[in-house]
Image (cartoon, rainbow, N blue to C red; front, side):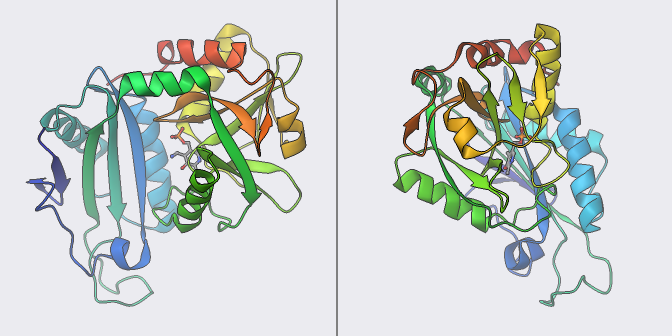
Length: 285
Ligand code: PMP
């Protein structure tokens, strides 16, 4: 299987693809990223991901490296060259290359762009979704600007590793007031006993997930009621259902939280339905 990455204007074999050691992404995590799901070799909800990318760049005062239409062409080309029909495409934009100094480069530099893509195992993913995943909770320890999709992911890396070491797949952060914010790489949801979906509002403490936003359209169409409010680990453990959303997990059932079974320990009915219906409401490009 070919492994090709786009790096600053060139399509390169992954073994030879490299960035400058003074790239600010490498030295300061001074950059942002997006991940799109790939289905049928097409990009899922590409426009919404690009709107969020533009916002992240604006918030960090990094210039847009090129028009979105050009990014679309390159992302599709990376998908094609890697022969990905089902999987993910990753886009990273950093502030660029400059002599090491924390403050922005005094003379503007060109942002660096890296795009990679790889296949995921569809059957395996479906199997995981059929049994559901376990999550752990841990104290929120990220910076307050988690609304920016920054490549600075050290707390998320440590949280995921802790989850793995404890036999779980995802970690949910709990803020100082005792409410779940989101997962280390996903948004967190529960379903109440009377069938209402609950997730935290994007106003504070979470990333505005694209899957989360599309799922809200799905819920409206399926007449599943939605509450945007914080919830605690206790409420989550006692909920009828729980799940996470992200571009690559789509709607992934959660069957245990901190070792306590959710519902009957099987993926919930509403969760399964949302997963099945999701792509009827997403855009393909
Ligand atoms: N929160 C965090 C911290 C994430 O890393 C992700 C995945 N990128 C999400 C939420 C879900 O976002 P999306 O649905 O856009 O993938």
